[in-house]
Image (cartoon, rainbow, N blue to C red; front, side, top):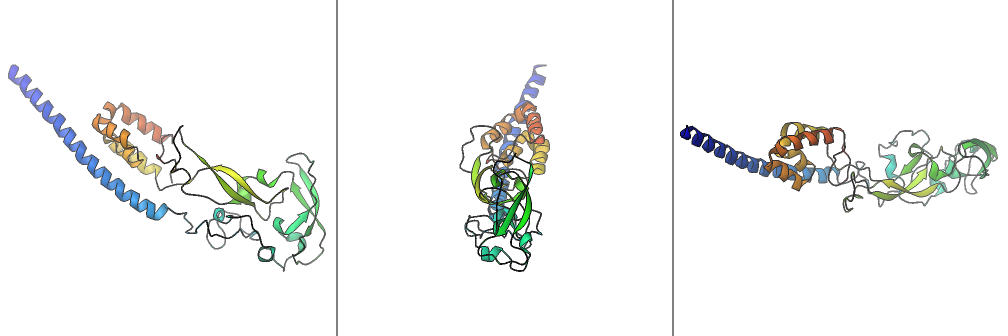
Length: 272
């Protein structure tokens, strides 16, 4: 009987030691894989997907009235075309269109600033002094009573950033820091006030982390902390690795948190 107990203790100790050795091996492999993913991510996703330097990009082309999606005719993201508020009407205002079809940045209108928000109003407009167009230079246009900064996102061009959350402290969860962006009202949007304005918006950029990858890691390798390592939670990952996934409880909790989207990358970016 005693020999059987000694044998059980012996095999149990060997199993624990083997588990820790295997855990350390997996930990080293995870670090190597995460390092490779990080270098690939930084080279591919460290810049905006458009490949355009936001510090040198020109102002938006408000006359692209045929562009209604998030991409312009040249295939670049519309959100990268509003880096500054400088505007040259000679470049953006066409000379071969009727005056009544000019974009909002090419005309001056007599707005009713005392109107009720959201109501449809009519204003008399005319081309700016340096704008050449065809037809009558005095015309009537309809607009919704609101200032340009009150327009919905789909009616504006705004510049984006990819590093606004990297150096911000994570004082709450989920961490979604804000940054100040420069926005233009789209050409087809007629609104009151300045058509170029600054807006505080949340950091909704992505650094290359995939929700599907994090979910698969959590389900199949969560007991080794691979999901936490993938999302760059190094301390929690080591804790899961050495505690057998919190005896399964921590693993189950992380599967739920990642599944509902509550647990995201440690740098505050969004899943792709």
